[in-house]
Length: 382
Image (cartoon, rainbow, N blue to C red):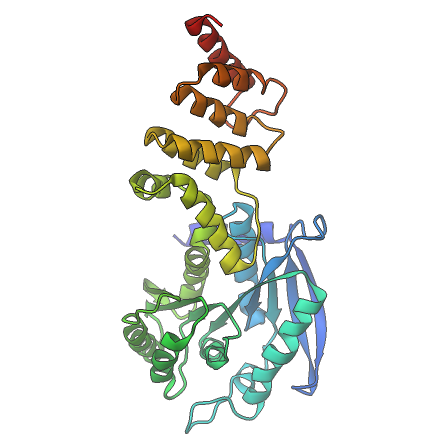
């Protein structure tokens, strides 16, 4: 098990090298000092000057940056999450002061109050001004810094769209305040909470109590996830929690999987083409990204439409694919299939034949399309 974990860590570090990591010093008026930042840009950041990216702010950047940045690079490489800008805030000798709160009311105090304003009023505006950012921001923290991230839920709207809260060292009254505050938040909120069975006892108990308070909340905008890792220690749970959190937060972004095909598409009573459109509209609404529909998702929804005999849905998918990938056989193939099934073989034959000079996609080859055209010609005597 240890050997497997070591190999995974080495792999994440190796792929992280491919991304662009820079080091900056940020002069903060709020803190009255300079803070060091680690910033990882997506691999192809310089290739498309119009593309924007979500932002992941990592507190405790001294040790949390690499596991977060490695997972972000890995997940985005396989399109399981969007490419993102990762910003690590170095806090090696200052984390306790940065996260300071009043023992009586549990709210940021002294240096903690300054750090609260530093993140919201200085750091994020700086990232927005100097990098191409989408309007979706995640915060990541561990114990003291995890507790501190919760304070931003009380801004209106909250500073972050997503919270990855790993074994929080909760301030007094924090649990009750969060349970009261979250149902009133109108924007979409993603909240991931984790502990482990071998976590520090007090932190584990506090996290379990917070989970008990948040789990019953029924708010349409509140997307809540919780893990209590078997044999997870205060430190090992971090390595298990980060990929789980990213996977859950960006679930809708992922290409349509075999499971989604089986459990969702094949059980739809509504047009499958509508599901495809809504999936990408949700991606745009949540993450501020206008990505083209993936070829994989066209094939998955078109195949499901064929199996469920939703021919009008297949036609809509073919039309969208033709607009988005006009140089490929994708749209013509499914449009030809539509014509075949609705009793217009001549149109089907001509559609298949007309794609002879286009690029092949996945299993859809030129030879296959020409064979379908020849079969129609032979059967109907055209």
